[in-house]
Amino acid sequence: GAVVSQHPSWVICKSGTSVKIECRSLDFQATTMFWYRQFPKQSLMLMATSNEGSKATYEQGVEKDKFLINHASLTLSTLTVTSAHPEDSSFYICSATDRVTAWETQYFGPGTRLLVL
Amino acid sequence: GQSLEQPSEVTAVEGAIVQINCTYQTSGFYGLSWYQQHDGGAPTFLSYNALDGLEETGRFSSFLSRSDSYGYLLLQELQMKDSASYFCAVRDDTGGFKTIFGAGTRLFVKA
Image 1: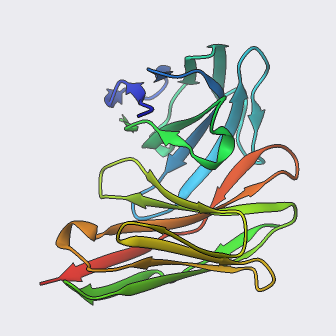
Image 2 (image 1 turned 45 degrees about the vertical axis):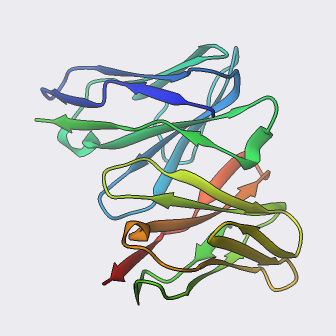
């Protein structure tokens, strides 16, 4: 089956530093990748939609200069949290859809837990 | 705007049947999906309904009524491992191709 990996799975950083999270589709080409954040016991909030080779589309209220997204290839998208602050601490999850099954089936990565001290 | 409503919690016993309802309001509706998420884990895809009716996949079934903007996930022969959060989600093409998730229903399965 389709597998999406995320790296790192856990990251603890100091306030003011930047953190890069990688999302890879391991055995399929992802036409579109999505980035979500999730607070404890809450739903997934879509942050941005990323298509290979084009600029990401950010949801209302998400700062594009703070959450930099790069989708350089059909198998890799990165999310960089710039100048992270404690309020950015969250569970960040990426998902991807492939060219064959399209949007209905999103394959999720295992998530990255970010703790900003 | 877009919104999905589902119960926040459901409790059932092993072996029972449970139904998790979802009502939605959205423009450009294309289909309703269901995802399961265990604590600390990532969501996994369960089912997708684009047309009215019931889709069955093993112990799980999903139903959609487009005219009622309503769907449900039916879990049969409940097992302890089914304790998790279940999210309904809709595709929404307004403003771009994306998925909107409901708030989730926490299912507790008791022995």
